[in-house]
Image 1 (cartoon, rainbow, N blue to C red):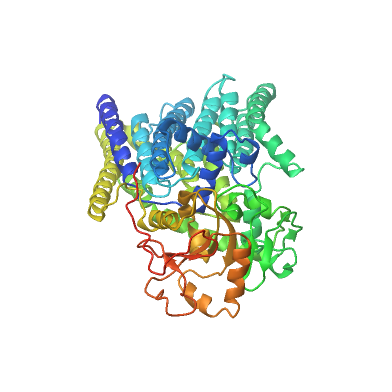
Image 2 (cartoon, rainbow, N blue to C red):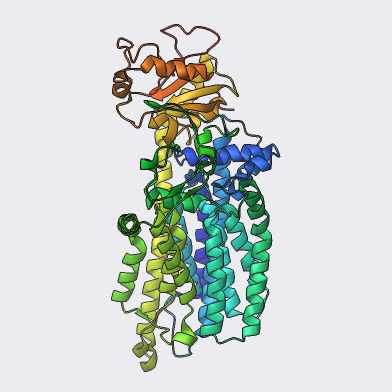
Length: 608
């Protein structure tokens, strides 16, 4: 395909991608979880200029700062804030597309720098741009959707830019790009603490590649590395200093250490108490301010020690689990690694497009080139970083939303390394050479447009489903919004203290409490989602548990039950009030007015 024609088609694709991405974001369904609620709570603190409270060892501040900016720009309320956050995520998606174009451009620049005259790349720059943007768009419809209120898409964007600047540093003799790379690695750290490890690895890879592969002078390599580290430290340092001051020790974030303790050391993730040594696993546990245990069976816990957050137990996990120090457990490490290997394979199977495309290109005659190590290994730096990221996550914890960056960093250089068969170039069979290039380019373009079309089809179907269901927005949840509405009808007001019971209401999604403006300061810990009423029926001291929660000042207890079982004719179901037409129920404890048994908590929910 003629490059000028391909360039125009690419422009057309990008022009179509923007509105289709917007439509997809508006009708991306509700996806809120506990992580999202914590980020929103931190955004509220930043919006109120309560800076010290926003410093936590578990969450980093850049994404909540973006949420706070979205709140300011849109003048949103709790009822319609998700619309603002979805719009923010759409802007991040567009930024990710730009970052991908930059990354692919710098990859091509380095490829041109090292390519011999007798090596013909199979995919041109514009074809690689099509591939990169197509894969980014696919990721935005799967593990990085705009409906996911979380920092992973922003982290991917920052690191794509940083990787592009790394490649440009290797392709250029200028020292300008190294400090810019340090800047974006620093911003990546402010997005998630994992960015610190990637930043250090990225600067090390840059210096090693220049010294070992490119044979540049030690003085120049050291100057570039020093500039990158200086800017990186200037961006990341203030937050590390604030966090270390808060923790009274050097600390850049406890997310990785706690995840390692939970997944490898076998430490209990929820409601860890100082005397429960059997739940420590192989970690060293010296809790500074654990959750206050009010009753052992069932476990009742107070989170009053943490003054912030809708659900303080998850607002800053490192607060209640301060001084949990993981130790390597070979059995746990092997078990975790085996599990994460399965998840890696699952991720690859969930993204078959690139591998099918690669197999077809090889079948049509594409070959790998650039085999002269020191002169042509343009693909090595980002592949090395991608594999390192994959391995680091594989040791601790893999979720699909963590992996797109590593996937891009590995897959795109692999496609960039494809070349026209050497025999075609040598014999001058231009027609066959051009046929192979045209076929490969056409398949890449087809992949990108198919992803776009499928996204539009899915969004249109979701819009139709929402219209039939009568949802006011694509991000509406009848269960969560209905539960919050029911709490308001019962008399719960912003700032009120409430309690929760069961995994579904407490841990899976507590956004209903945020919508109502309430804080969950007490939890009745029953590790059951689907048979909560049966567990409640079996408690011999059920009334004692209720009295303890009532003594804490909670207005009511909220749990998620099967509506068919909540008849009110059994002791455990008696007294619970259904919140609208949802599966959430409330047991009034300290409400100012008595609640009639047949109270209806259903009313129209405002949309603005």
